[in-house]
Image 1: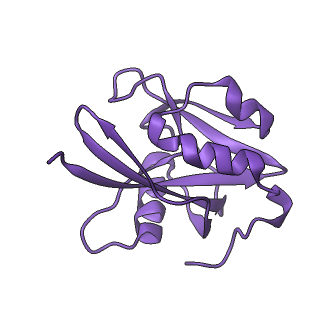
Image 2: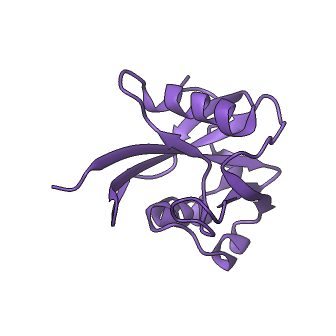
Length: 141
């Protein structure tokens, strides 16, 4: 059985645009785009993990909102990634990039213009169909 890796990602929405992050070339799945986030540690809720990861990756404080789509699972060579993406909002915006080479705000249509990691595809599709003005950004934390 492949290793199960439970991961959480943040879909930041601001002024009708979505934040996309490109992984550093030297990292696993380098050059692909993803929602920022990371592994859920033992004893953490997904929301707690997301807040910790965004502090580590961007040096930012966030609020976590509702889940974007069903958790998606994708089998990679190194294991099976189970990704849950939540809508989120920045409390601070430092963007100190550690794991990413690029950060950009995209319209829903522009999300199709870049190569997303396979595990992120379901959330991208859900966001493209969503009415972003109705997304609950504050609430579950």
